[in-house]
Image (cartoon, rainbow, N blue to C red; front, side, top):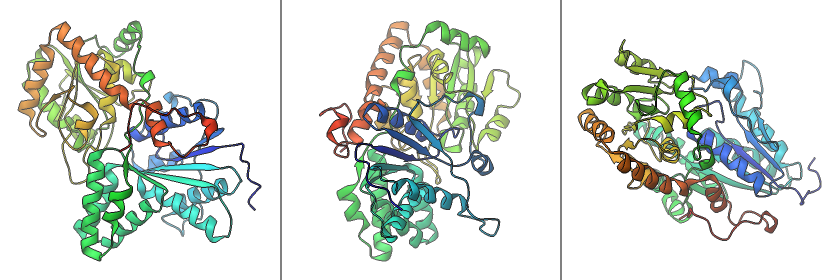
Length: 436
């Protein structure tokens, strides 16, 4: 049974593909959880999936023994599956929604945020529906954050395949939340356009409600983890990898077809950098094997699949240039670019990227931009970056960091949770990022 309301307590639950998954939103969830402790939440929980389920799914994972710890007060829960082999799918989802039911009915006022609509928002909405159907009261406020792959990988696929019912179901789940946000203006526009297509197909009115309700909340990044780096720590980390400061061009992200690592390998070989610098491809993902095969036995190209969270900013700071030549693909479009913001905060050589999706919102006017899927232009951009004199490079790094600071996790948290918290959380009236 539900307990008596414990109004002096406040809980935040974030449902997300958390560490060890290599995903910017795992990092974002960590950042929001840490700020929640500073803003008066007594109990902060990250709800995710069992490690064995993540491994079985083939998701790119960080080394398990090198994950950064969470602060005391943050609990990571990974509910186990419910049912046996006769329930081939949905076992883990039922385990997650069942645990959320228990948290929602224990008397603690709760804000529950889901990142990715499928399946995380489904679990939240199902749990809350079950609570209310059971006749129980629950003080729960929900936030659903839609990311690019919710639309590109789910809704667009449904529309292309004529599975309009699945797309309509996703929008219904999204709009069932108290606050609906998108990770960029580009993502919001993408959601709105997809909703219009569903409305045309089945006579619904999703687009009207989405236009009125969906706000922008950029991903939250822990700026403190990327600024004020110790130069000696940078040099030591590079030496351990056989690298030297300003001696390599860096790609550090999930290695997927849409991230453009293949274009970067071809561009690097065609650039003057191939005679003076190494190329480092750091990360893992579904395109890793193909990218490594493309590189062949080229000793100038170094692949790193075991970069820990603490090492990431050091590698970014020490590079001569950082390249993320993202390109639109049917299954994925870069709807923000968290890794770009992290690199801009870390300093070091300039960022080279494209204007794909929401990337312009992440980098502003601080990056060297090239057309996507254009290795020749990318090669020229690499040479341009390496030719920058120290003063030009320092000025570019300073401008990039100033732009990236608007995505610091504290400012993002304060805007995202504005109006949802009681007075004792002492939220500032103004902050640097605006939900619009």
